Image 1 (cartoon, rainbow, N blue to C red):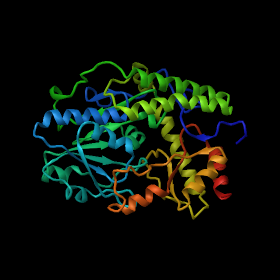
Image 2 (cartoon, helix red, strand yellow):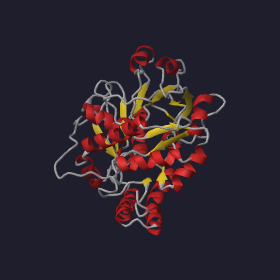
Image 3 (cartoon, helix red, strand yellow):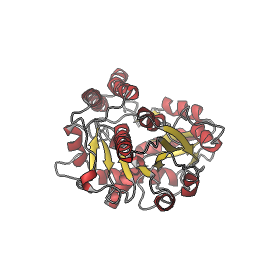
Image 4 (cartoon, rainbow, N blue to C red):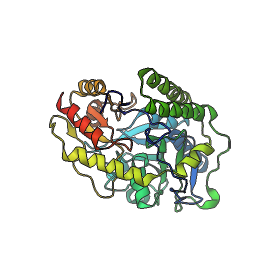
Length: 371
């Protein structure tokens, strides 16, 4: 990698070099026609689901059960909609046991948030256990990390859960979140409608400006442009942190979504993940996943190390910008969930997305060997 290259990781840009893959033909069909709501972002997707459940339940239940391994943005919509939150355990290998969840459900529980991590699906579904023992409890299935895997399978829907996706974690979308409503739980005449048909204009505009500036930065990678390109994206994040507005996705993002060349992205991420795994030579930095099943499209290459901050600083010095999934939210008590609290202190995600090829993966491997 040359010194003039824009580095590895950080935000996408609305260009091929910035990670966007576009086709004039329609690539992503309506895999679940009339069952999907297009909203402004992933948090708005959770908010729409909660709002609908509270309106239809009508019985005063106000408790949500969330996994102990998550980020603050997943907690925010539950709190904004007036729900009390409690947590259930997640194993060190990031698997979730439905029985452990069911044991924590009580009569005041309205919803359970179910999670999949890094594109690797959970080994069991909570639907059979909860459906038999707690039929009034609805599962919100956050499948954002499963987006590539689910597109490959040809299905964006959970049979007995409300499925959510945030595609902007995967590519250069100004604003979009998806809510796939289950046919078994919600007949078509009861599907929720967005009471406000407008868009989240400020959020979408800041994001669009940032993505265009990022595209310029990928074409002309100078430090001052890098800083300027990130500012609009940070402003959009700040708007979302202050308040979640449950609004429609912009027409621009809906168009980009349907013309997104996800199959190319699926291949790129799998190739890069497999290459890192096959050439890994730093045993003190441990990959969270040692195998790549045929059906999986990973969102990143998560690793674990006791010296995360040192590793992160070293990688940034080599123009590699790895995100953290995630910093433990203050609401999750570390003493009750020591395993995931420790993981939150040690996890780092190596970027493997569609912007990069094997040359960049070699650069990452070389940087890791130099620490």
